[in-house]
Image (cartoon, rainbow, N blue to C red):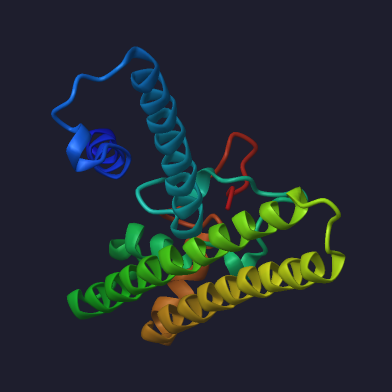
Length: 195
């Protein structure tokens, strides 16, 4: 369904209204197909990146548990973990609603911030394609990109902390039990919880 929406949007953007009724030339058709394939690929990459930010709909225990790419314990998708283990933690319906609201608000914010990052990346590509390269502009754009990425990470950490603040002390203890591999958690093949 998403692919059809992307194709429709791409066609609306690519085919001018006056040409919509004109016969499509084979070369034009190939160019449109190439553009659509590229758009679908980029959208897939964006959605995968958003999925990593939110860790929605996946088992939070299946991610990499160690190594240079692993998130720190403070950056685990705690809100998704809380919601996934709502029964073990003992969340009330009101707490579930608040946690879902936090997660949804962050999803919207992450989409906006990611779009800003992607635009800045395109701007940087344009600056690097120039001859000669204006290093002052490149440096400023690289620093802007670093700030945009840092802002997204800080927003994510703030959302996690807001989610933790919703829990009672007893629920926080239960969450720690889930995170450390206690009852209700899912150990990996090696016996350790993969977060």
